[in-house]
Image (cartoon, rainbow, N blue to C red; front, side, top):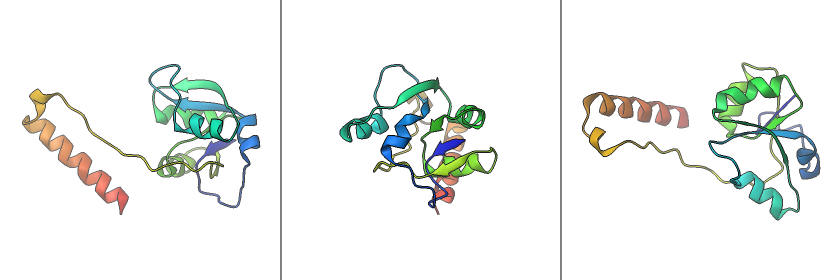
Length: 130
C-alpha cells in the first residue's frame, strides 16, 4: 500500500516505479494537469490516474485498499499514515512548496462569525507550522 510523500525516507522509489502504479488524485475538475504531472512529463514520464476524489480525506481510504499512490503534502500524508495502513515515501520529484489561502465573499468581510472563523483557522495553521 502506498501514499506518496514522506515519512519513511528509507524507501526510495524511482520515477519509473512511481508511474507503474495507479494514482489517486484530489481534484475538483477533470482534465487539468497539476504540478506532479508537469514534473513527470519533464522527466519523460506519465502517470495513470485510477481515481479522482474531491477531498483529500477520502484518498487514504482508497490507497489502503489498493496498490494506488496518492501524492499530497507531507503533513497530510504523515497524518493519514497514523490512521491508515499505508506506506509513506518521498516522491521521486522535486515538488514546490504550496500556499494555503482562504477566500470569502466581500459581504462577509466584516461578518462577526466569519471573522471568528478566519481567526481560528489562522491560529491553527500558524500553530501547525511551528
